[in-house]
Amino acid sequence: MVRVLVVSANDLYGRGIAALVRTKPGFQVVGYEPDLDGAIDAIQQLRPEAIVLIQAPYPLSEAMEWAARALSAGADRVVWLNPNDHTLRIIEHEQRIARRVEDLFTAMSPGWQQCAQ
Image (cartoon, rainbow, N blue to C red; front, side, top):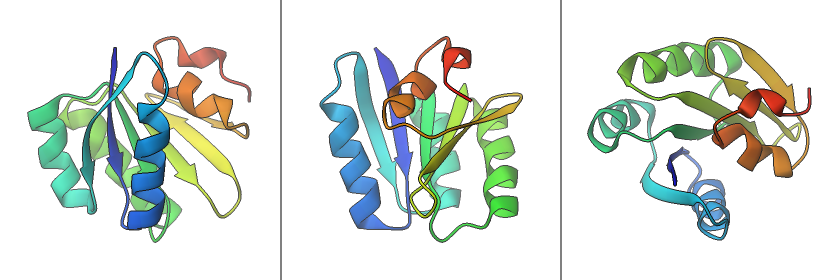
């Protein structure tokens, strides 16, 4: 079971992605955080394997800096979903970009490197 924390300042996007993740066998949403600082605390407490960070309103530089903090706090990987350009970035110790909805689940799973580039 892959434990997932959803982080989004946009409640509609965040709760929607959380609901989508709950429908997929093998994935468990362990929390939802509306702000980045609260999410770091949640990572330390809940120990999720994957973080889904919904882009709005975070600029790329802030999201990348936060992803580094999330990895340092104990997350295995951050999946940064950008609804504006329909991409997601998988951040572990490197970054990859994917464009298909199915890639969201691949990105949260062990072996995410198989995700389309």
